[in-house]
Length: 211
Image (cartoon, helix red, strand yellow):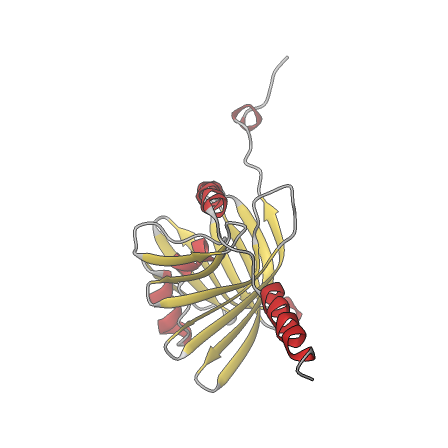
């Protein structure tokens, strides 16, 4: 048994080393700087996904449809069968919220508008950056990255966001697939089923051609 003890210790040490995540290196930080620039420039997108909202002991399961571009921003939370529960849209500097009953309200702040209407604390202004895997500009943040230069965890505006899974598309900047965020009594889990880039029309496409 005494002869086997060193071998068992060695096996245990090797197993522990094998389970450790890859180390963050200078290359990881360079990749993170590159990803930040690419993600902040990625302003024209459409996603489909699912949201689980935890508020105290209540749990709400919702569908998510989010269209984002400089010209138009529409976030829709859906119940079963894709029926809209809440839709908020940016119009002329204001956010307009429409309920399933057709009631409409407007305010400068989307988060306050959602909170007043539903009681849900969903940080729309920060989430439009966090859901892309990048911190919101203009606010202090504490990012933690992985060896591939992707956000692993982010603390900002009182929220703690954990990135659980990324897409595996090797031809583009890695985009989050699963994340969980929490602040106080509210937790939000988001699963993104589809990311889609929206192509802006070229200037020549805006006007007809006469030959």
